[in-house]
Length: 226
Image (cartoon, rainbow, N blue to C red; front, side):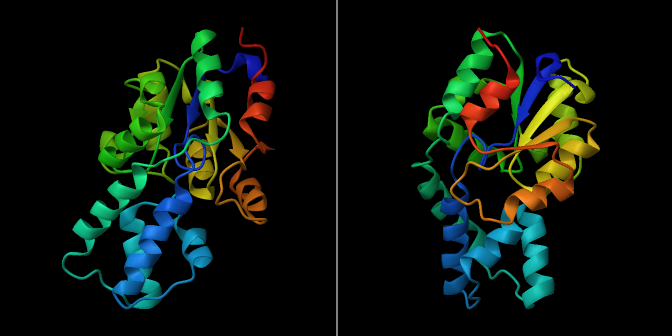
């Protein structure tokens, strides 16, 4: 589908609009270490990026026979909230959203983040006013987060656009899988501080139609926006 014909653009949040993956994963790794489980941050991120808490806890149980102790979740929530108060944007993300807004081209955010963290990161990064009410999380779809397609399907419906006419912009294999399963065109964005040399190939294998390295390139590929 030519870029100019996309009916809407659906963005992941972490690693696509805000550079929060290193913040979040650093908190996780440090807290796990305090509770007796030492994991190298790169190895943890390879599994965590694009995942949900439920999936991560299942993985930790199956791979490391580790069960979260009492008090772990409240402490994790508190530390993540503190870290996310300093959430930076991905370079050029604000300009992309502003260009879409000026051109009256619909867009939304669809994230596996918990709702409280989703809104905290949008506020802290200064993107909340641009996104408005179109920020969606797994609670909007009964907890059926990525890699299932429900979240992107819901976001598309909320904008009044068929998922098959949407562009999804993602940085994780789980997110790409979700977008493809929803019937959208998916482009991978390799612009966050967490990106490593294997990320692009992982996104390709999951079904990304293109790989971009910056928001500047994304705006160029989306075509004239006024």
